[in-house]
Image 1 (cartoon, rainbow, N blue to C red):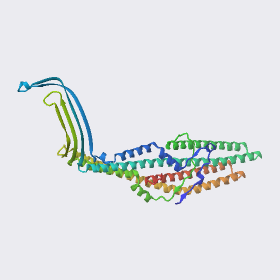
Image 2 (cartoon, rainbow, N blue to C red):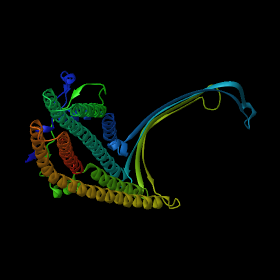
Image 3 (cartoon, helix red, strand yellow):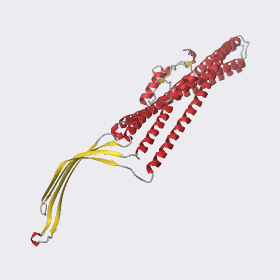
Length: 434
């Protein structure tokens, strides 16, 4: 695989970073995926969906319950019969009612609603996994962009440092010429002012680098005050094919897959809602125990116990067409899910095409910008030699320095833009490795 390699992008490390930890691109991605709180939350959601994906939650397993009740009560009793000799009257008579039972029931048939619910739960679990993959892709995309942005900012600093070196050389030449009476104070002062300005620009650029590292550490959920060293180059893969990216968008993009899963989920909801209009058959069985003891009255002890079994058939006849309306609404929701999927696919396809256009255009610009950078470097060297021979002025040197800086900035900018477009294409096609 052919790649463009720009070794000049690496910045000479400041002395303060010699003891700092070097952070590679792959390590940054690994740490971000390990520490990110949003990723951890998405993992928990996947775990919940996996727990819910069972026949028990779908309603396909037997339900068994047990109950015990012991009731003691005080009653007043008065019984009047045809034969007055049988009349009874009692105050504060105690009675006890003890009952216990184990009951179970199992759904035998309800229009395959349980089977459909189990499939829906499985589709939800798959969807949450795709949503986790989407969140991970976005995080990796952001980490890579920030990482390579630091590389870009460091290359800015190196360009400024090279310009400072040239400025120092110019100042030394002016001081040497002044010592023999070939230069005046105006040239000396201008050279010193230009050098101070360049040093100040480098200091400002170092602030941009430090803040970029803080942003990266925040993405990695690390201490923002940590010292890190980013040593890397921008490697651009020249073999990205639009057809492969578009195929990946349709078949591998986690957002598109999750949208397809939502269509499937809504279709299962349609079937579940439609099953409400079918009869349901339930088998039930259990064992009951009942004991009632009275201190007075006609019955002093009543004891019942034993198993039971039965079948219950429920047939929905009419409920104001509620189930029918619910089924119609579920059908509309399925169509809406299809529209969301189609819109998402269209947007991702459009974005992929635009990113590929930016990718190819910036690759072309890289070649021109690299040639221009090499020419500007040669021009600066030539002008410095002419200045040393008093064949060029300070203004010409300054113009050559400015051309060198602009060429360096342009080269790294188009390199970063091409890499950013490549990262976007990989994300759309789910080809980012992590």
